[in-house]
Length: 313
Ligand SMILES: Nc1ncnc2c1ncn2[C@@H]1O[C@H](COP(=O)(O)OP(=O)(O)O)[C@@H](O)[C@H]1O
Ligand SMILES: [Mg+2]
Image 1 (tube, rainbow, N blue to C red):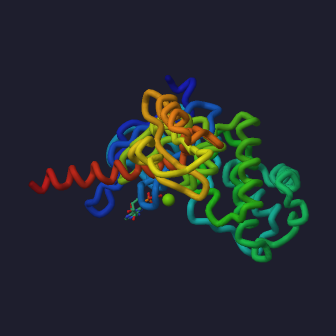
Image 2: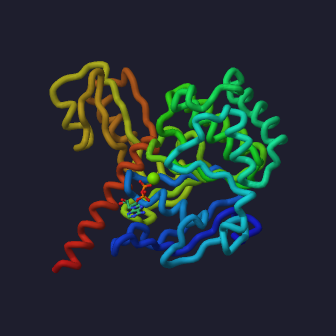
């Protein structure tokens, strides 16, 4: 893919802080028009990566282009950014705070105020148009800041942990807003360590841990790294059933959970039926993004430990 089809393209990004490498050769390619998630545990290097992509800090190695610009800050007026550390002027009214953030990206204040009112109303915050920031709840202030990052209608929206600190109602408002921005034609890059939002929103995602990229692909690709799980409820539970189930089978409140072998569950189910245990309930599902994330990050930690032991030896 080229800069015609990619909103962001980065290869081999490196950042050291105080002699410690916190981002260690990260590649990211964000297709235009996509909702792209950067997932990772706390301290993985997500914020540092986003800041390098935006040109807020300079990488110590690697290469990146943002909306076709080699110097990301040249694209500033086409970019909206919600930083991890939030902050608005407490004495400003919501509509003025939004217009002010737009003005920093080249939008005239009058248009900004007009759009701010529409944006607040569309987000279900019409009642807060003239409310001062200091009177808003933390979650509402965060949404106002988010609206301030889209008021100039950017081509690219970069949101660092936008869901953190929001209650479930405001989280839903934010999800709707992200989808609306995508439908408007924007590309969205957001970081999170909460998988549920990513699972619903992302066209593609990467998982980073310990400063390295550990996975890249779609939600389905990530879930596909895990085997299917079965939940089986027998008609008659009894002695000998465990011997017919895979070794990892565990009993729960009403039945058994086990990993489906690569060649499928049919042979197991046939054994169970032949032995008279029957099938009162059965579901076979791919585990969710949360489970895939936990496994990928866990495997990364083990790899890193093995590497450091090797280096010490
Ligand atoms: N300005 C800085 N100076 C020193 N260390 C930093 C700085 N910014 C981040 N770090 C460290 O780099 C690592 C990655 O941080 P960060 O990119 O904020 O991770 P994430 O956003 O995934 O939680 C952490 O160990 C953090 O303490
Ligand atoms: Mg962060």
